[in-house]
Length: 330
Ligand code: ATP
Ligand code: LTN
Image 1 (cartoon, helix red, strand yellow):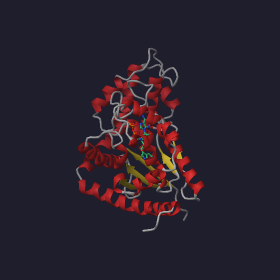
Image 2 (tube, rainbow, N blue to C red):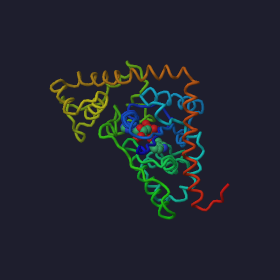
Image 3 (spheres, rainbow, N blue to C red):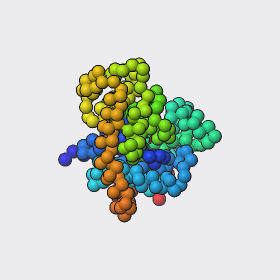
Image 4 (cartoon, protein in one colour):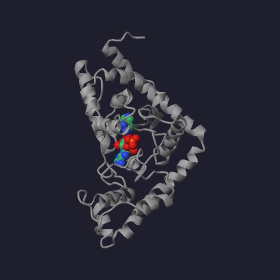
């Protein structure tokens, strides 16, 4: 039988999962899990690049695992683990940092955004974050990295680092490709449709675990425009286009079908309908996540066996890398 290609992806437990991270990432992880050999990670080491409350970080890491499973990721099929449990991530990141240019990291838009936002705490970790991400991906000889649009630049940098390393030594790393979904790659904020929906900006953000009333309230208040037509036009109608995208991603309908459904209906009907579609989407996820959160022993067994399997793979790559750069074997 032909060996399946490998997927790696992760989300930081730096806040609660949002509708954006579901539509941009997790939904596609679920869709790809049968055709690929997948590792899905809770990247807690990335989360501490901005200050976290320790108890919250610990709680959210577990909740995130429960939510991954509740979204439909099968722990029997996928390796699911917590980044800090596999020390090879930090070890490879150090080596790769020595093959990454200061200039390359300075050009990362996420670094520019976040260093503006956290101007009082621009740490070396925030700057070298993409190197750790490259280590995550390259440790597992990953072929495909399913992420939202905002992470494409980081995956491209990861390819550049891998290419450089392979060029200096010899073939060591598989070159990964980003997988950006055709629909939902960039869900925008409901309050400010020109910026990305983001968990660190709770205004305009819908969380996967929000109560139904809260979801309905957020959609009813979503910014649209002063026209009435429910039409997709990203330039001139960013709010409505975003709501249409959310509606399509939540229901599986095409854009044409959605536009037709709401033709002549006005925003008073459209906005609550999007809210209801999202409520229906998250209802079973919420029920399952809450059930799983009560079973700490089960969650522990998943992340422990996940870390063991991940580490076995990671060690192979790290050993190869240490040998190539000239470290004495242990
Ligand atoms: P932060 O606010 O801390 O930057 P975030 O809300 O952007 O966090 P991440 O943890 O950075 O979320 O993202 C997790 C995954 O979800 C990534 O693959 C990212 O590309 C994707 N993602 C995040 N927000 C969105 C969004 N609004 N639309 C589509 N995909 C998204
Ligand atoms: N930087 C990503 C999270 C992340 C990731 C990864 C995604 C860390 N390591 C490896 C894919 C592959 C983000 O969403 N902010």
